[in-house]
Figure 1 (spheres, chains in turn yellow, purple):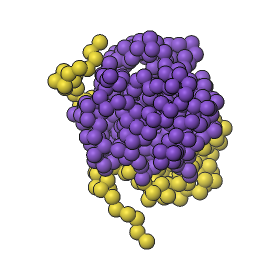
Figure 2 (cartoon, helix red, strand yellow):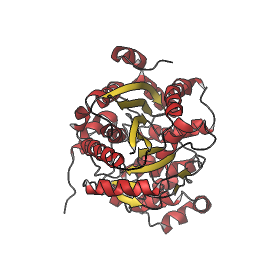
Figure 3 (cartoon, each protein chain N blue to C red):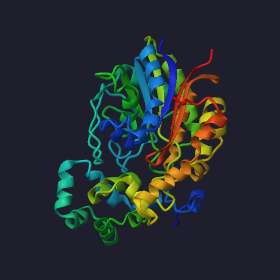
Figure 4 (cartoon, one colour):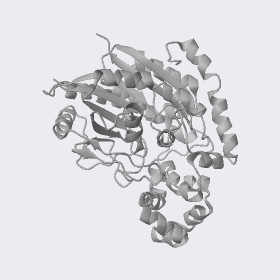
Length: 133
Length: 280
């Protein structure tokens, strides 16, 4: 039995959340889903290790949760929207996680976004018809 | 007869929800983004739609990954927002329209779009942020709303073309409803952004503007793209742009552009706003 290959597997630095990841990350994402409840968030905060064990995470996943290693969690099947629910516990935002994926600071990550958007208003003028206030 | 009087598009990212909750609209970072919604809000207040069909994806509030419908339609009398674990304050609930929803479900399924029908459905920021962007200046929601959730989270996902065809079927469904209702269809999400992996942080302004222009004039251009091609350009979360095609399919082949707005970056995202109506 093998997992299907996909064109998107070739996109660098990208972990498309498909069946292969969804199955390996199921327990991890299920735990993160439980954080929609305040009561569960408190239980997790009180004893993170025990909470991870209760949800049946692998040892590696549990260690990555405790360490806040989001790249590892992504690679082990964490879905980004569910990882965001975990990130809150480490006092992190999605942008902090975005930075941590590539081992840069959040300030550097925000600068990258600005750089990628540079000159967009000139491009709007070239295309035409855009609102400008 | 019910009629689609316009199509809207908008991003739905939670950072926008937080900015509205914190009243940051005049903050220099946000001002140009939010100001770009004002003409749409004015138009909506003039035409006063009765009901909004909001096409969005759930990010882990109503649907967990144990059961992921490709297309799900709200058929409830009320829709509640709730704690997503991200710290966004929960919004007031939304009034639905059961008869209209079940009519849409019947018509869509007859047209071979096998919708999952939901009699209970919590709506997350993907639905709530757009509703707030367009109508938060009202004391209470001035119209009914129907959630139409598209799976853009757990692959395999549907395609841009399939979303476009769903929009065409949705138009037929709306127009076969006997009650005089003014309906707007809102395509949410996008544009380019990738939240995950070493490639997080990509924004592709050129691709975003191509999407906007082609959604207006040549939706076939996007329909012809594979999801892999869209993700390669727009990022894994940028795939949400396929939901704009549901809105576009629900309009006539030729459309008037009443408003077109783009801003980047907004948090991690290239953000686009459209207000389109059928060209007579």
